[in-house]
Length: 112
Length: 117
Image (cartoon, helix red, strand yellow):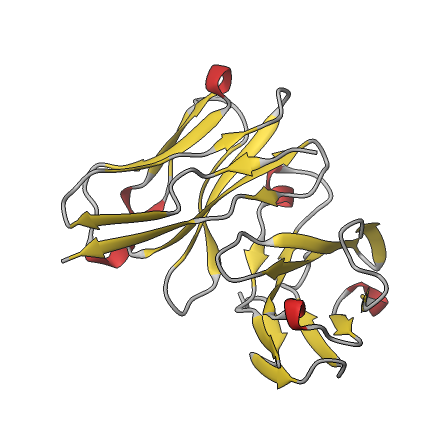
């Protein structure tokens, strides 16, 4: 079974700082990759996804992620965070027709 | 479009009692998932339905958890009897399924927070 590792469990930044959240997965074949976000008091929602093609994908609110197959990674980035980016971020991996498997999440706090 | 509806939002019970959670997916979504999210952890799949059939329930503790999706629309997740370690948020999600790019994108409900005392 595939597994997903998010190494940063808690991240605290000041506004305008750059963000990179790590995500590594364990499967070596074709994968679908996702980042979901949960803002305080809201539902989990899709931030961005990768199925195929350009390994650099752009999502909502200025977020992007890069799929690096050789490193089994799908790191999330944002060049300049805002206070409103305070949320829980989850990386998820889908292999073939299996169930999307989620990482344990990274809690991001952005100080104004 | 209406989102995934879940109820109740909060439930407090004592151990050994029973509880049921309800989910109504997005109209037209064939695939429905129940996830358990314990505080500080990522969502863990309990069961996946494709229409009214079970696709995967390998992580469902079947001695106490049960789920059904009659008529391929609404779903109910039941816990009986509850244990302290069942305290968690129970998330329902749905997707178009079974194929196509939208098939694997999950739309989540707000979740049902269970506290077992």
